[in-house]
Amino acid sequence: GDSVTQMEGPVTLSEEAFLTINCTYTATGYPSLFWYVQYPGEGLQLLLKATKADDKGSNKGFEATYRKETTSFHLEKGSVQVSDSAVYFCALSDDGGSYIPTFGRGTSLIVHP
Amino acid sequence: DAGVIQSPRHEVTEMGQEVTLRCKPISGHDYLFWYRQTMMRGLELLIYFNNNVPIDDSGMPEDRFSAKMPNASFSTLKIQPSEPRDSAVYFCASSLTGPGTEQYFGPGTRLTVT
Image 1 (cartoon, each protein chain N blue to C red):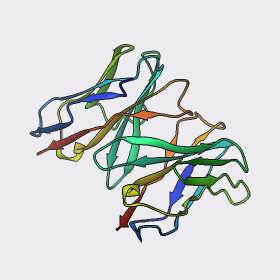
Image 2 (image 1 turned 120 degrees about the horizontal axis):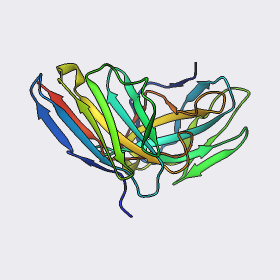
Image 3 (image 1 turned 45 degrees about the horizontal axis):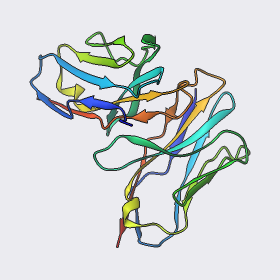
């Protein structure tokens, strides 16, 4: 079946540091890939997405590139802020299955001033 | 435009009691999802509806759980009887065109069963 594997957190960074959160996946079909963010006490919200190989999704300074050859969708940001502290979820929706999204376990990011 | 609305935000109940969680999806969204989030199991899809009809309830843990969507603007998730292991955050989400597209999540209901 489909699966998403994320690096375990928490990831702790100082403000203005470079961020990478790794995400790899397995899928039976050709999935769309997503990053969601969950701020404390809130529901998940879509951060960015990519629907085909080599697409780059970007939003709020975050970006991720759909790499079919390595089945990866790593999240990056060049300079994090304290307000980026949240839990980040990688997810996929597989056109070879039911399209129901499969979520990773989430990676907590803590940014210190 | 209001997002997905859930109530209550917090619920504390005793084991054996009935619990009803409520959700109002975004107007015009044809799909509604119920998720459960725990530290142990992460985010799990319980059930989803399309045009008020349950499509996949394979994630519902057992017969104690039931979900209904009597109209396009309202859904409930009921647990009867509740057990301590049901303690979790329950999210409702809706989407416009299908399970594979962007989902809009509500703020969640934190359920504690003592």
